[in-house]
Image 1 (cartoon, rainbow, N blue to C red):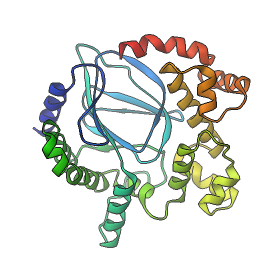
Image 2: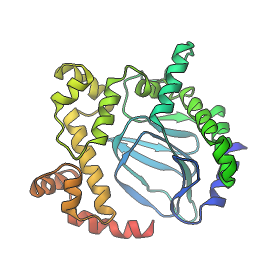
Image 3: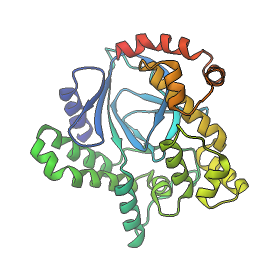
Length: 297
């Protein structure tokens, strides 16, 4: 069975918890053998596929638990909480993290639209929360296996890597999350472009009026459409992106004031106040609490 072969490949190539590079750009394996509660994170455009165990993500109070029956599709940068609460030595988690290349995904989306390729419409319509779970179908499973089989040979990766990654992207666009992903990568998605701008410019002032102007919408229309796509108001989204990024930096050992400046906060006191309001701890307390988890990973 293809999933069992994928699991065996990951087991053979991961010798510690955390992420392991495959040699294929944007494709990393991961293993977890200890329970880690959901903590602030930022999912960049990606797909996360689990072949053993389960993983959790929480977006604006919506909880997603996924395993080897469904993979997670996140076509836009999203502030989430993520963890592996059920992982253990007896029940390890194995999975694959695949970054979604904006250029390639956009090219494929436009090509499919140009030839009239009908993509399945997922339940709940197009404007749902910013991440979605999709069934492991045969096309996705086979394409993922073919991609990972390249990892053991640098020549194969160099010659065939881009083509097989493109094949996997195509399987994603043709799968259960296909219409959802196309919404983000299609030529007309102003909200996705706005989110991409926010993600790349967290250290500079960002106003809602500027975001709306970039999207070519009035403030009121932009606010409504943004919330339809992400479940969050624009100002809430920007704040969550900044604070989640800062929380990750602090957990990684960065000084609190440096992390605050890195995500656009000029006032340390405002940063500490908003951080504590969101996470229930001061930035310093948060960093100290995360060190045992980071050390174990």
